[in-house]
Image (cartoon, rainbow, N blue to C red):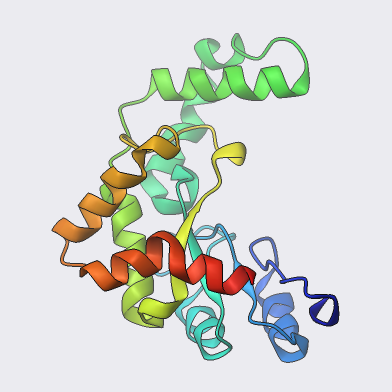
Length: 186
């Protein structure tokens, strides 16, 4: 893939595969939409050791907006909501329509998911990896419940404002918002 100019995305890779891919990757790898396992023990999230190894190879982590990846308690609430009649009645039609309707049912049936969970993962990744290795990963096309203020891409300024309020400087905000992902993809 590297010889063809294709960047490897390790978001769906297990830990063993992740490290094996780093050994053979000719380009800086990407983890486009995974959170920090130190904050939420989801199997799709990456450990601090993985974050450090990714940064050492020049790679980039995209912080996701998937609530299931960002907070264990919220994931349990979503799992419980999926067993309700309101959720079960939402999924009619084809696969795409069902996915959208189920997402709307989860979004409407649970309290808003605070944007601060996204900020927490971004701050942790910045601390472990450094400013040159963190980006926005959203995963809008694969999530049911979206954080409050991040229902679609028009909410990116709200995320950047929240990061700024948490102490992230302007140079780092530019890197997280654009520069790191652009560098990793070129």
